[in-house]
Length: 315
Image (cartoon, rainbow, N blue to C red; front, side, top):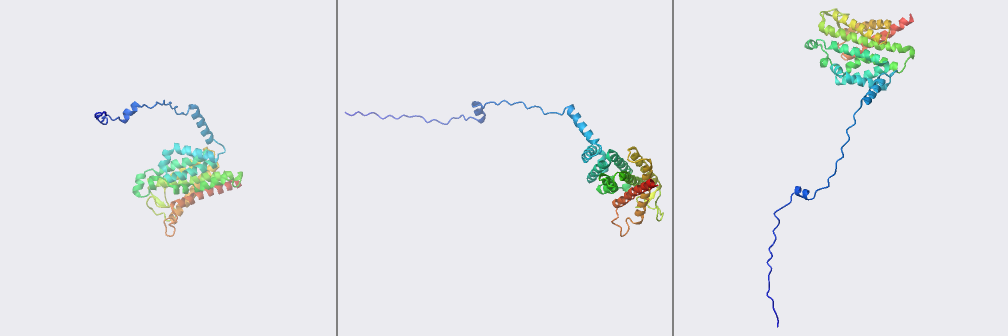
């Protein structure tokens, strides 16, 4: 006898997807990451007073190196140009600063801090008189470009003879017997240029009667090339005496050499006035600009001083 079982069907309800979906934040809470303890960073090392004192001592020792070296000359000039940047920027263009820095390094290497101070004195006085009544000079069309801020051409034109004397001294040309002559020529060149700058700028600002001194004696406007004024001539003479005195106080030259520098500078400036009146801005001489005339002027002053000193020593 066969038995049959009734078929049974299991009705199992299907599970619907969960309505709760965990977020990344929830997962982070369910599975926390192990915490890594952060080590505190050591505080940055600061310069102690002892370190600063040692650095200052090193710089001062370098500046005071005697005889001066290229290393001491570069360090000294960078320090001075940085500290005196407001004065430097007021008197020089960006490219002019580069040329002046090269001049300063060469001067310091040749004649030390005293020679550099002489050039710095020339720069400060020259800048001051150039900016004197600058608005009036601009209105009359006789002011220096860039409101008196000198460019590299002016720096080179003002220092070419001094640079030559510096190179001669550095390389020991002529031996110890000529060392003093190169130093004299160096001082005389800047006495000549300061006298020229002061006489020109004072004449532009205050000159009442301006004349061609050695040609026609004709009254001409202020700022005319080769023209001179009584006010400017006196001011230029005083400026030359002042800078020669600085050279004496800095022991660059002695009293008799200071007198030589003043005389040579006035003769050279007379020659520059002659060149300006007779040749500058004339047809066929357009190449003879102010910078080139300055080179001729200071070269005459430097060479004259050396020759006059040789004559004095010979006699």
